[in-house]
Image (cartoon, rainbow, N blue to C red; front, side, top):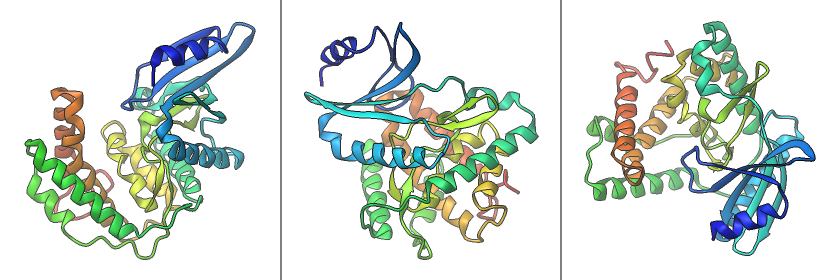
Length: 293
């Protein structure tokens, strides 16, 4: 996938092209527009070998958009040479991660309630692929364990995390659903007092409760938002086993984060260590985190 060829292609269709370098993905991203059109667009470019998974995500987002959910609207999906070009509407607003701490606590909680309700609606989309989730998640843990051992860096509180992960996970017959995959304040835009959900590039199918595993990133900035998200999702009636399941998924994420962060440098490894320590500090003789009580 040649970046020069991609930008040459984009120049045939748009007069203004701004590369976007924010985010953790390796996808190429652009903000584009034409001087004769006030509209701006967000473009994501992927290699052609991802066409099946990317088309699935695009189609699922289209279904969510047609249901009226406040997400970044998908516009077109094209394959050109050895790359995929996906076009979405450009969302004008502020990243919620940057502004939420400046809002009063009631507003933070209200936005969390809204985020929870939106997530519940995302999870109304059924999985398109049959999956034995327990087998899938156990294999995922084993892959993360191998990568962790090979990376040679010890996770803070390693033994405590392993105790959680070595207990069998029970999903109580929850059906596998479509997931956002990276649901936290960094992937939400705050525009005119409303939330718009963006960045579905890690979306997939799985246990819907796993979609809370990135709430750890929201907690560090706004525990009130995180609390509201849980309450909004469950309509203020949180199942008893939710927090035990959430702790498992927090542990799985933390355990895999070190090997994942190494290619991004020592600073990112330290950030993952810090997050793992934060998560560990939330638990004191209970599976309910301290920030929720």
